[in-house]
Length: 495
Image (cartoon, one colour):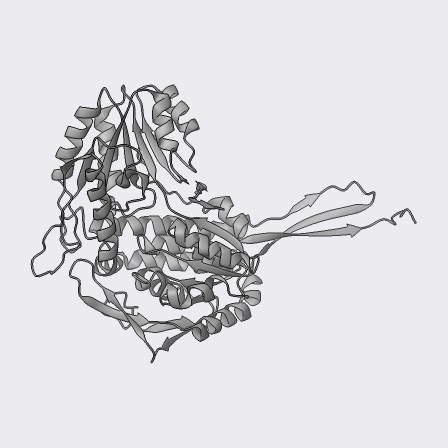
């Protein structure tokens, strides 16, 4: 019988040691952001549940690591096939649980496929080295081994692909995993991942999923003594706590944290291309992307035209329920997030900015207290205003003017974050100069900041994280080296 990936399936179970364990304790209601209705419920795991998950992971890891590379790659490829065969059901699940529009759902599945494809290549790339020695007759062998038990803590905004980008490489490299998804998206970020790998033939215990509130089990997960590495994606504030807790066990930490990404537009930029990138980079998935455009930094000579055209484009974007196929801007994930970002808009206007369009919620028929926010454009913004200096995580486009390239770079870098960024310039040398000087993990020329390719390293600087994901970077993060020397000839010692 095909696996049921719809929101109507029974998701009230933890996945531990290859079993779906029904839960008689507290549960957490899973709300549809478009309708504000509870669509399913999941277990509120306890610390005892967390212990059982880690015990299963620790028991299963060694045998899994001994499997041939071809077997580990096969399981990952099977998960990929399962994902692609059920794409439409999974896209609908995005709308039901994450408020994701059709574009967002299909995009997330495509990114997830890319990460699974890349992960399937890792077992055959997990090579060691042979090193010469300064000691006569000695042979040095450097082996690469799995790290052990990997903890994955994933966020709510792109829950599936941001879980898979850590889970799939960890499994492919011979580790076992305990996955804790975000409370708002426990199915997409966790239980769905378990179903994909169960269908793929992953042995019992290699992947374990515990759902629950971070306030209840977060420290138990991040600081579990069986955890050898922690891969976390989320806010900088929470990430600092996770890193500190993980460090108590000397677990390796791979952290992708917050961002405040600048979209720089110079005086000779192609405004058509710059605005195309601006609209996508600010408003896709309601701006709930850590690498979305947080600030539009635009040369004063084209500033007025840029603002006018950005307002026109924003007002043309259909905003509404994620279940409407025409919707581009869907709901914010919950009212706390909505209220915080609308508060930033209000503070910014009070500080002297101009609200060009948006700034209000969109009423939905039959829905009380809608979570859909109008695409919002703010002009006359300075870098210290609330919508610019904070990671607003919503469909908000603050536009900041600059007079020369040096000032643009200064504005772009005037933040504690360093995740992504973009620059549009008519002269490629100028664009490269700006990109080189932007203090971020990645910069995209004549594009916008939202880019993720599984074979290209992905990391942030400063308050945007440490370590990294993708390709060789994640291979190194989730494995460790072991030096074995062989003294083949008799060695002379000094005494």
